[in-house]
Image 1 (cartoon, rainbow, N blue to C red):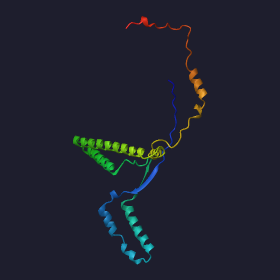
Image 2 (spheres, rainbow, N blue to C red; image 1 turned 120 degrees about the vertical axis):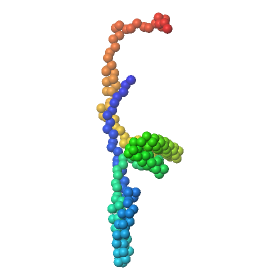
Image 3 (cartoon, rainbow, N blue to C red; image 1 turned 90 degrees about the vertical axis):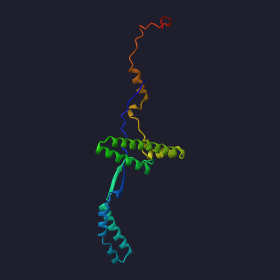
Image 4 (cartoon, one colour; image 1 turned 30 degrees about the vertical axis):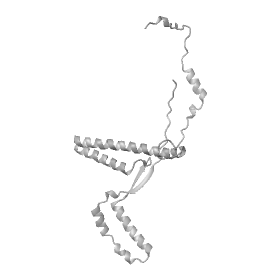
Length: 198
């Protein structure tokens, strides 16, 4: 059997930047207190509607910047389309169960976490299978590969063969000459099947 090993450096995946506000982290009491301190009554002193809009937007933006600042994250893959809201809920319950077990180390909490983990894993696999069945049934080959590449499956760049392997004759000569010459001066005696007993 003939084989070779190529050390091909893979291309770096492009990073996607996504910015959002985490409204789940807002403390309702402190948010309402700061909202009451906003001088919204001053908006009546402005005559121009554009100035009123700018005034309102400025103070609302300051309020959200304090209680729900913009968070920027980098991703190397697009969001998986099969991760639905229900799947996210199952993953959240799984993670909470795992965090609780790490705190308590109770066997009951461990079994509870395992149930949620297995249920979430099966749900993700089923959703993923259903998504690809849906895509493959409603897309031609070109659109199917576009969606797969969008998800990070497959490569967008063609891998080039190194120049040292471009000459097939040199490769052939190498493998031909690396085999030692067999000495045929004393060939082995042929095997006779009538001499072999079972």
